Image 1 (cartoon, helix red, strand yellow):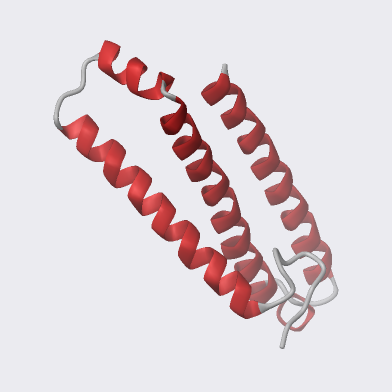
Image 2 (tube, one colour; image 1 turned 45 degrees about the vertical axis):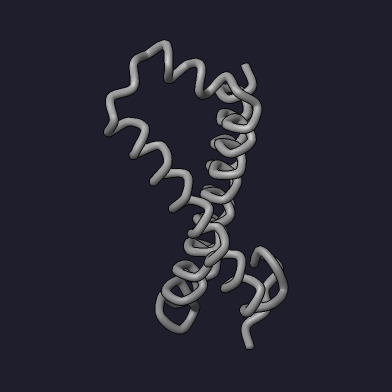
Length: 119
């Protein structure tokens, strides 16, 4: 079993479960927004929809779900393909650097999302 300090949780099963739950949340959000968009929503209706507290919470849940989902997915890719065995001695350095870049990007994305949704 692989355990690493950089995983979202300490268990592969819980990471798997988090990824599945976040996928369902993202699916619900994008289906809802897609149906609203496909039915021809005017700008005023769109702003009124996103001004409601329940929609702000739903959007924030989608943003946090996207960040968690992306982190687990990228962690899996980095730990599977950027190893010392495959890349030599620079594999760990590259993996840790990319993990730091990914985590920084996701934190910036979440903060930016909070500013946009609650502004």
